[in-house]
Length: 464
View 1 (cartoon, one colour):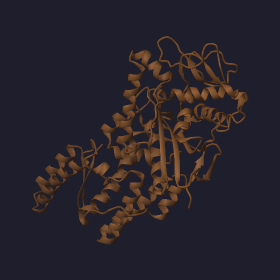
View 2 (cartoon, one colour):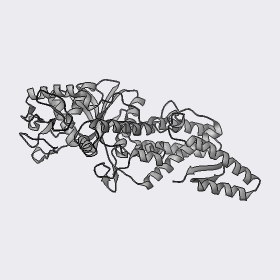
View 3 (cartoon, one colour):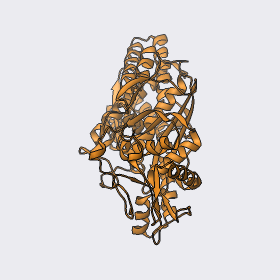
């Protein structure tokens, strides 16, 4: 079965046919680095990390480019209000984004270009578009794209040109048509600028991505991704610039949904964001990956503490099964391939919810096998579960999460210490010293642990 994708432009789920057989090229609109990332930002990177992993599992050679917008109106405004240099703000927040991606297990991109490193490519693109009549410069030094010069404009967002309202930034003067959008903005006092044939200035947001896509992925590539809030104006304007320049541009457009809080999109400007750096001090990063990665990428996630606790419970159920098999039967390697039903779910527009249902079914079957003392079946189910979780980047036994490089995740250390205490409690129970047994349990509960006594021994989980 071929991989099928929901293409935003057509509104249909289409068979994926790569431009180059056996290869996949993906461009993801990455961070605008005016502030540290919240979980809505990282969700986009995580969703496309899962897609990338699935393509790789299916045997494709993946080129994954995720850009950094390190100059734009928001960064300049942040510089103005804080008094910090724009580049210092950008670099600090770029590091915060990369730390967030890494903490949640996202693979590094093939390339991560910054906008300010590609001014030459932007100027060359503008020159060609002006020569072809698709763009024009004003006496003030602004450069605009003429939307009426491009008949396919709005084919992605399916709006009517007559009803179009183009967002504008400060200093965008001299437009021939209010629907035209800025490719280059003339310099203003105190702002960063670069020289061009039309005067000093800085790039418009949309031009940055068109230039970087062309440099790293060429005239045609497979998949362009990003949050659905980027469909208009950003992605629509990218298409206009790039196709008018002569590129075929993206074959498929994939957009992930938002993380919302009280029904509103999580946003820095709305002040309702939940920072990744704060979340990883309260929750294990692998649980956050499970929480953000298991819903379908096109489904909105309504953030709440209760929803996170439910996700933690679901993940702990999986992890507990794996730990029990290891305790009873030793280490078990992942299977060479995933079950067909899991693959079928993932092939259909990266259906992670359906794929996770297969994982949980295997866990239930594995627990039943353990209860029946069926070692062969328990080990087989664990091998399948590890293979499926590995593809999703959620295998708790993978060295990234379980090994020395697991960062601040001390679950393994805590587990070893708690087990020593539980062994002492079990010894007290066996000699019918109920007072000592209860005292040990009470101390563990006070320390923030839940203790569950089962036929095969006591289990512990964190009490959030």
